[in-house]
Amino acid sequence: MTLVVKIGGGAGVATISIVGEIARCVADGQRIVLLHGGSALTNTLCERLGHAVRMISSPNGMVSRYTDAETLHIYAMAVAGQINTELVALLQQQGVNALGLAGVDGRLLLARRKSVVRSVTPEGRVQLVRDDYTGQIEHVNATLLRLLLDAGYTPVIAPLALSLEGERLNVDGDRAAAAVAVALHGDALVIMTNVPGLLRDPDDGTTLIENIPADQFTDYLGYAQGRMHKKLLGAQEALQGGVPRVCIGSTSLLAVLNGEGTTIARERMLI
Image 1 (cartoon, rainbow, N blue to C red):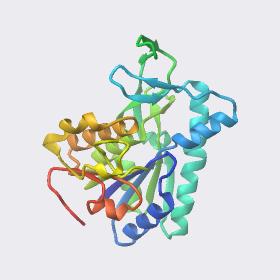
Image 2 (cartoon, rainbow, N blue to C red):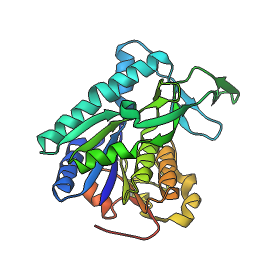
Image 3 (spheres, helix red, strand yellow):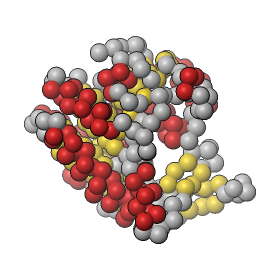
Image 4 (spheres, rainbow, N blue to C red):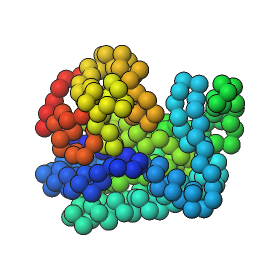
């Protein structure tokens, strides 16, 4: 079984326990590719360096980080310089032969830089942003990942991509994980975050939506707010690309795989 696991970059994610469960899965013979975020640490580093954090709201309500050249530099320090190496070290402590990569290594993640980003101001006006270093993934070097998996490595990927012009780009970690899962024909994409899953009421943890049939997925998009919207967008892209199921949850990877959280699947499958 091949699993693609995304560990969120926000505060409150149970990273240590999730890493331990990944080690158990690897020991049981499962092939795992791990991707991670870095939003909280990027914000912290920006604050320490006196660089303002700016978020962009698109006309469809999606919120993303404005990534100018300086923010890209800070983001790369956070995701590739600190978080990636910390996760690799944690996995090595658990006996997993992890190998850290950024998406720029070996042309692992190729993306098209967005020439123009539309941003809605608080007054409702649409502005065009042209100096944003973000991108949409167009190709995953699945051959490289299979070589590493076949050799017994567990790849740990930082969400930096290479543009067609050779630039570093900030790419969304959830959608990057979806692209990797599709490229590897993964059995599941698991998105571990700091909320229990998709909630009907984002302020009430008891309103969890546990199961969503893939053919009814769009009916539930209205419940997604903030970062959950991107997670569901990644889930949609994974399912459309042939991944059988996507699981979203918190705290325990194994529990989420077995139905604790939100599962979006063509068929309900437990391991």
